Every structure is written in structure tokens, then in C-alpha cells.
Amino acid sequence: VSRPVRGPHAHGHIVERYLDVARAIGCRVDAVRFPITVSDRDRMAAEMLMQREGVPEGRTFVAFAVGANWPNKRWPAEHFAALGDRLYEAHIVPVLVGGGHLDATIAADIMAAARIPPVNLVGRTNLKQLAHLFTRAALVLGGDTGPVHLAAGLGRPTVMLMGPTDANRNGPYGQQENAIEVDRSCRGCWKRTCPKGLDCLAAITVDEVASKIQAVLQR
Image (cartoon, rainbow, N blue to C red; front, side, top):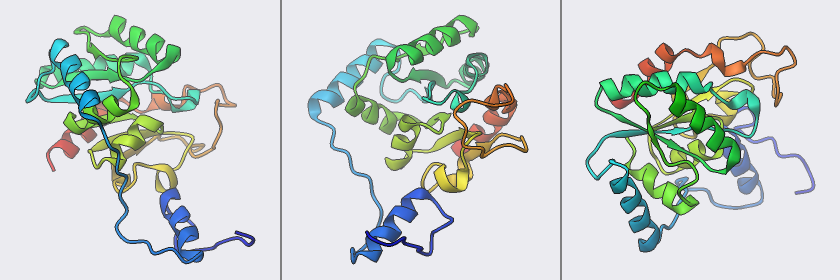
């Protein structure tokens, strides 16, 4: 593309902006889908893992995508822990997901802070197995990060916690109304770390998230 494309979604979701570029070069855009093929082997591995960890088929669970590359996109571990305790009271199992050393550290902090430890699957699935796990989840919660966008692309209910990025542009595609944006005047700053030294998403309370999850699950 040798010239800027200013399509009808110039101020909309990033997916729609990219599709405007596709339209500009003559592509036909019909229904937007994000197919991902999961092999029987990966599906079975995910099912066996969940079975071993006490989340068999039919057990209601919410997946917590605990990490994010940007520090400003991470919800505090103690908030995840408190929310997990509330979900257990509602007979919903909180399941921690993610990968890498940082996510493992966050998951350990959540487990230590929780009254009832969540199921910890961080680092125990590959991407395809995680996708299958999401198809079983009642809802996926996390920041503006890859696993939550994966869940939204699969059509699963998501709640995304947002601070430095904008829900209209980067929220869960097709369900931006499920984003919770931090109540700070500086939100949408696009800074990886806060120049004011604030823990950005800490201002999003457990009560807010619990209420949003309840509302989404009741739809």
C-alpha cells in the first residue's frame, strides 16, 4: 500500500482498520472469523490435564490470563486471588493460565494470596491446548493481552481489564462492551510503564470485576 488508507473504521477497532486496508486493495470482506484447528492429540491432552486438576467436563470455570508483557496491563495478584475466592463461593472454579517465567511468578503470588488456591495451569499447555481450554471456559478474564484476544476470537465471553490502551481500539473484538477501563484521567496513555509511578490496573476493584463477570454470565 503506497498511500494511507482512511476507511470508515479509522477510529474504530484495530481489526476493522486492518479490514479497511484489505477492502482498499480489492479484497472481499464477509463474516469475520478467527478459525484455529486443534488436533485430537492437543484436545485430549487439554482434557486429561483439566480432569487431573479437578476441572472435568461439566464443571464451570473461569480462566484467568494472569500476565501481560506491559506492566501497565497487569492486574494485581492479590486482586486475582480475592476474585478467585469469590468465584469458589459461587461454585465456579478459577483457573490460572499463561506461560513463561513472569506468568509463573504471578501465578505463585496469586496462589499464596488466595484463601482457596485456584487451579494453576500456567506453563502447562501449548497454544492449541489453551485454545481448547478456552472453548470449555464459561469466561476468560485478563488484561489487553494475547490469550484474552484469542478467547474473544474463538467467540468465548471475555472480560478485559484496560488501562494504557483504549477499549474502542483494542478491546475484545466483537464484545468491547465487556472491557473495564480504569477510572483514571490518564487512561489510554499507551505507556508500557506508568510515568507517574502508579499501579495502573490496581484501581479496577474486585467488586467491579465480579459484577461485570456476573452480568456477562447471566446474558
